Image (tube, rainbow, N blue to C red; front, side, top):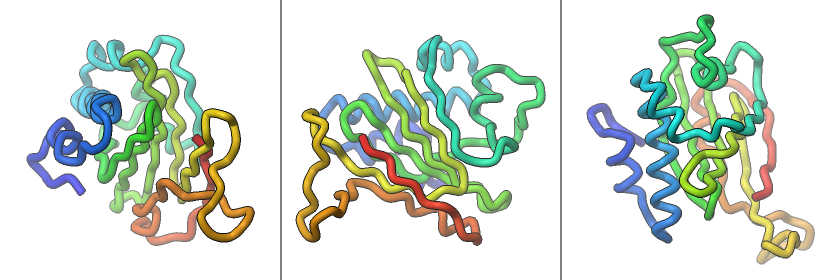
Length: 172
């Protein structure tokens, strides 16, 4: 959990593990939040693909990211994406955070291709479980129990918003 005074880049470096590509992808995604929160649109344009694919699951009133990315004048400039955890699985970077004052938990699943973010799947007030599929398209068999999908990541902050939230499975 980041503390005040710790930059997103320091968070990425402190949690970096695995391959250099995973660490590089984490740093890129954290740089996006830094640019969004500081209003640096020039940096955002360099980080996000011009044809960004965006998926959203949540109430329309919580489309803070899309409003920020499109420069919508109705954007709530007081909302800040403050990552509390980050994990990378190859080209997919999962980031989660919450705004307890607004009872909002969020998860972003970003796809990084050739050094830019090409896809963002955004989930608000949704518990997300990520499972991994092999390159062959086959679901990795679970170590115990036939038919169970292996969990490689699971959101943890959704419980902090003080209400029951739906759950979804994301296969990567």
